[in-house]
Length: 367
Image (spheres, rainbow, N blue to C red):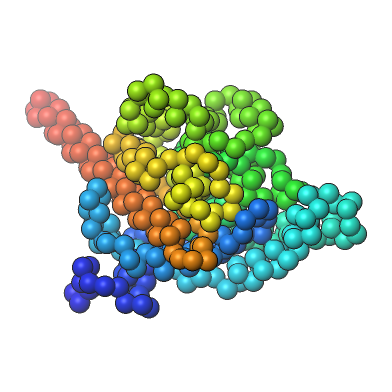
């Protein structure tokens, strides 16, 4: 818009990153999902989308690596009231189950509560899938802002249907490969077991920064016949201690991925200094610059980022530090996604021109 000044302070009631764009005017659509029904340790991730929105208005719009992502248009949809209502209901039902450690025999009525929680999670999954599908069909780049890490299942499903054979780059402290956790089918600890079992179009899952994992999860990954690749935090650090630079590690990580890549980032994949209030923080993790260099490495390799989610950001009681880090990581993800798609478009145009020249040359020779 002609009156928009990207260097001015954002208005308090402006859109994400202080931008004036409507969803229809924007290339990038962010879907807030304030849902954390099965969170079993720390809470607050349902406040993540609002914390990121609030903090985003303090982010300078010129990015030293990706330029001016905002010019493509970025819009966050209104926070869905129905999802917030499902979350409140599911959290209340899940609490006694979590307190019992998932033991349904510990108190009467827990089995019925569990069934209702799972049903509410399925309703949320369907809402995310339909919303993501609508905007993907409109030609938008779609990102999900959680909420706990159960919420992007519907978005991953929608993207995989449109990009069959895609890979998921998963940054996290946890593998999230449990078949279920505390009885919850759609637990935040089960997101990628559900993805790998229920979305066959996902060809590869590459997990980076894992440092808190169960034996059953390791067994499940080992039996995937290479469909799941785990890159553990201890191994990444050991390589660094041995003098392997991060950019070389990034190139090795990216080689595991197919040409189309979906980013699924749990903020606790970062050093917990950067996300102290996330639900399940674990010592270790990537620095901010390491995480963004990993995303940049996808683009440098010629691969295309087709979609993304950022989950588990939880606002703290004393300030917006977690939201600030989340908003900045999200802006980097948006910027590199836009660059990757622009590079792919130019590559296709170059190949088309080359084919046309070869065809023209053959025609001249025939004459």
